[in-house]
Length: 241
Image (cartoon, rainbow, N blue to C red; front, side, top):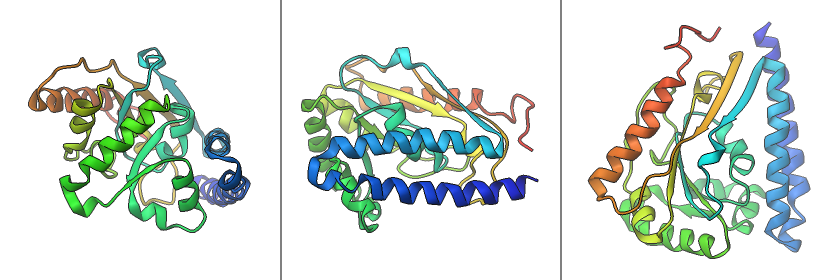
């Protein structure tokens, strides 16, 4: 049954995504706000479609998001969180790999929305570009969304936390709000089948200003990984099926 449900979900997901990209094209003329609006509809639509495969979504910890722009540093396990960023943190600027900019139409919309594309192969040499983009976002009243591991990590695994998040923390004056979730257990990376259950995304308490690089990176990693472990459905004995 879940095989058939996954087929239906995937077909509708790609149709919905294509529709959103086409409907967002006027943003190239009228401005980025149209793109953000389309992205919000994308996320809400995906949430509805996930019901086909028995997946619910719960967002926790919004009280940890202050009114001013922040840096949201999130675990990256799945395609799910990329569809939900605009729902989670409206009007945010995302730090993303340059390959996404190469996708026809979609890449143009990302640039139009002010996203920060980086070449991950260049290592720390892209840090000034990231900092400049985050500062520009702050001046516009927008938060910055980053995946501190730099790439997707299989659910239940721990990736290498990169220097970039500390660079933003140290150079922009913005608070860092860590975030954890368990989406990879239900929408696994590079897997066709979806797994029924509840995706939980949790914003965590902001990291205080003034920490050294070593202390900051430990606090960031511990916060995200401990919360991710607590959200692990296998640990709770609720193994996906």
